Amino acid sequence: MELTEQQKRFFQTFGYLIMPGLVKDDIDWITREFEGVFSDRGVVHDPNKRTVIVPFIDQRERFCTLLDHPGIHGIAAGLLGDDFNYLGGDGNYYTGDTQWHSDGFHKVGTFLKIALYLDPVTRHTGALRVLPGSQQVYLKDQQWGGLNARNATELWGIEQRDVPAIALESQPGDVVAFNHNIMHASFGGSTRRRMFTLNLSTQATTPEEIADLESFIAGGARFWKEQVHSDIMRETASPERLRHLRQPMEHEGHLPALVAKARAEMAEPARG
Ligand SMILES: O=C(O)CCC(=O)C(=O)O
Image 1 (cartoon, rainbow, N blue to C red):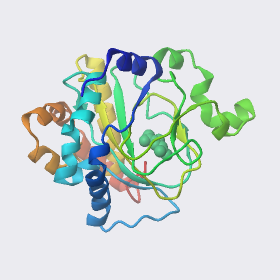
Image 2: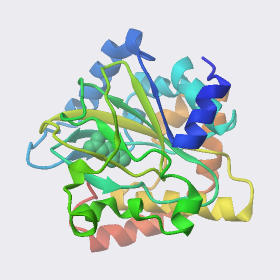
Image 3: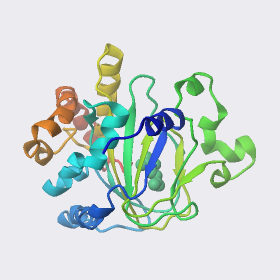
């Protein structure tokens, strides 16, 4: 699957892309793998708090092949280049609202999240909402107020759920992709919202990009993981998949020390 030039331009401009039905032929096995990761570990979701496993598709051999899926690979290669990096991802049972935030903010390179919601989600039942265009670096440099949407009540006298935004409503089999910098949130979802993600980035080349990649990888220490990917992901990789694992593998050497520190300071791994 190849993205059109218009789809790439749309992503560059607005910071997200929705691909209806992209994996609809595969949604049954994808859903089984999702459930399997939690049941393999005996994890039972507590509806009072988010349950998260990191890295996620990495946990089962078949699930790892999602990275090789022509649709998923096509989005990643189309938006990030053929030599994109795979940086893990999370699998979640979300509970309730997610406040406005961005997933960090990168001034160099492009970091992409591909998300699959396994239940139908609408604007008012937990669909991802985004502020289109809010990923643009110049908005950060100019301290655009929308980047503080979490303070909607104080700033604008409205609830966070009333911040003007696009809702990326989706059905199982649809795929949502968004720039990590984009402001996003979700409102009105159930206490058992099934969703998982893949994190990806452009291949880092400049010293600034490499430092930024290492800093992103360091962020994984809060999940108490000493590697970006699982051994299964690496050991079952084709040469093409390995191409997307290599650079993160070469830049994860700082993780074990950071994980040791996190274990000493945190009662349990982070939940998000
Ligand atoms: O679906 C949600 O509640 C939020 C998802 C999100 O914030 C994320 O994946 O970064």
